[in-house]
Structures are given as structure tokens and as C-alpha cells.
Image 1 (tube, rainbow, N blue to C red):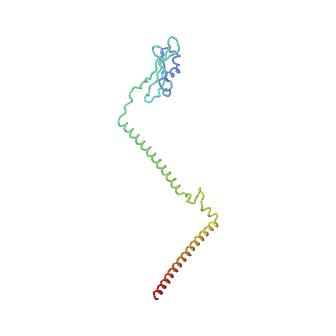
Image 2 (cartoon, helix red, strand yellow):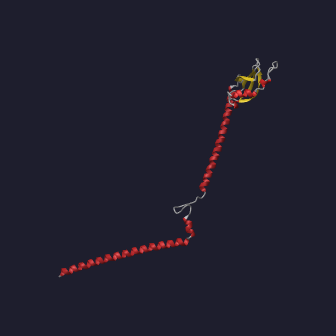
Image 3 (spheres, rainbow, N blue to C red):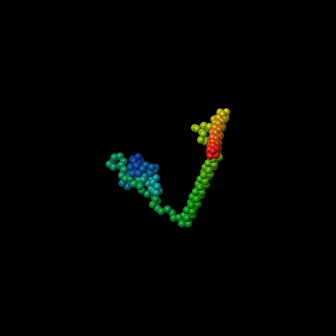
Length: 214
């Protein structure tokens, strides 16, 4: 928007963008202020500098900073405000209900299609995860038993020294046979002792019978 042609405008005011922006930053964050959108020359000699607004919910509105020169001094800020532009307060064109309903239904169908695609991608990811888990289960795992120590397999050590393992086994078998032989000898001696005792008892009975005969 430009100034009125019949009015003379002080170029110091139309170029006071830095002054206007500094005033705007005192009332609103800098990211809500857009680029310059022209100016309006007021009847009293003031100039309203306009800037696009980036506030959501305010389409067609402008940040407006009124500046003026008082008593020949440097430009100064008179007022800072957010004002609607031409047509900002007009209602949008009327749209029949059938058209709005059709647009709403189309949007719902598109959203449902996106959800289905996301579900399929999720299922594919789960299938891939299950396949990886099955592959891990199929892989042979290291087997350890109570004889393993710090990852060293005792069976491998035995395989490296088979003669020593056989000697140990032979010694163990010899010890077992010796123990069984000793136990058998003890049992035989015990049985013979019991038989001697029985014979002595029978001899004693015979002596008693001989005494009774006399």
C-alpha cells in the first residue's frame, strides 16, 4: 500500500523500519513479525508502517506502528497495534453443506488409507523381527556343562590327552576291584568264623551228653 499522492510524506518516517521493529519486539516475539507491507500517510502528518503478521488465526492482519516527527526532532513511535487489513473481517464465501460433507468424507477416506499403509508397514517390520529371532534360534549355540571352567571345555582337554584319561580310568577300575576283593575276603573269613563257632557248640553239646551218660 502506498501513500496518498496529494500529501507529502516525510521520508524519515517511511524509512523508520528499524525504529518500528524495535517497538514491535517489545510487545511480541520477533518470529511473529513478517516483512514490511507498505505504509499509510495519516492526515496529521504521521505515518503508519505496516508489517505482515505470522500469528496463527490472524490472516489478513498487519502489525501497525505509527511514527511521527514532533518539533523537528527525530522520528518517534506514537502507537503499536495489530489491525485487520481490507477484507480480513469479512466472512468467507458460503459453501453448500453437501460440498463440505463430500470434502469431509474424502478426507476421512484418505486418512484411513494412510492408516492402513502404516499398519502394513508395522506388520512387515514385525515379520522381519520374527524371522530374525527364528534364525537366531536355529543357529547352534555353544554348549557348556559343569566341567567347563571360564569357557574351557574339559572334554577337549581329555581329547588332547587320551592316554592320561585311560590311565586314570584303569587305576580307578583297579581300586574298585581291590576294594571288592577285600570285602569278599572279609565276608569269607566271617562266614568261616561263624561255622567254627557252630562246630564248637556242637562239640560242647556232645561232651555234655557224654557226662550225662556216666
